[in-house]
Length: 208
Image (tube, rainbow, N blue to C red):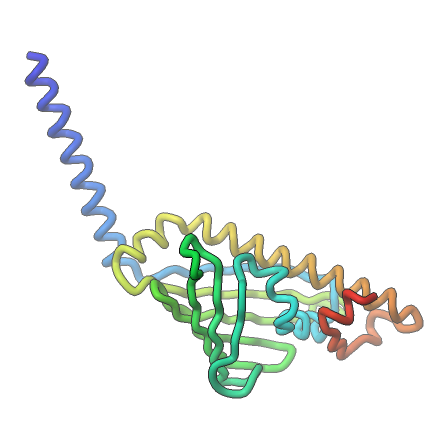
């Protein structure tokens, strides 16, 4: 009797494992890809936020895992420019993300395609002036795995991916606001609304 129950338990276990595998494969094959949105309000003028977002010297401070970004084709900061981005990973050599700028409307929007070993996607970022000294950053990420099992993993870890993305843009908000306050303190004779084109580098801010 005990042997019969043991065999029955093993059979049920095998069936459950098979069902999980089938579900995992189906999720990957049928997935249309992932879509994530982020929105933060930054207490700084849109022009200042734009310049800070594009400052490569600051990127490592709000993009966890960023090791290096290199222009490989086109004119830096213009449509068509292609970059190779090295990110830290469990692999000692790190992982590589290729990025190509697809749209730029100064102070308003910035978009790029990205491609790595395991996934491909597109990001669109909009900068909306909420007031003279506030900016809303709206981010839309669309991405998909290159093979079915990657799509399944992306779906499985979707909440963690969204959480990490939110933390990243919250970090950007904190950094920009801190740098904006530094600039205001260094220019006491001007009001916040007077600072309309603050192209300040990371080195300049760190010296103040």
